[in-house]
Length: 81
Image 1 (tube, helix red, strand yellow):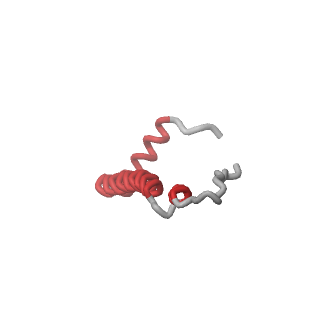
Image 2: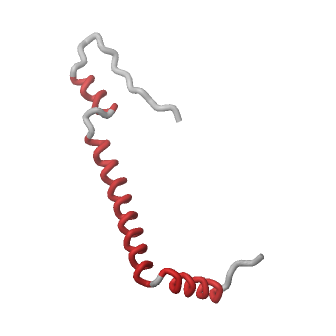
Image 3: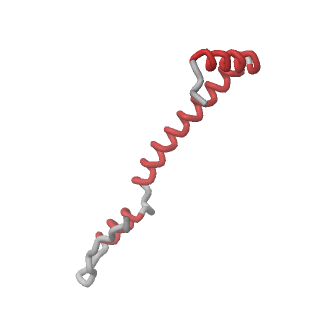
């Protein structure tokens, strides 16, 4: 079974347009574009808020280093990969 030719895809596209109509396909396209844009913004905002979050482990370590006294041993934790 080979791949479909260009003519097969054009016939499928024509059937889809006849079934759904151009207005509904336009709405689906704009909804999909809005969802992708929202996802990208969420990923971008999620990375920025994680770096600025004072409860993050790196912020806790830096706060602990400021309050360290002479008896504190300074070590750096590494994650297992």
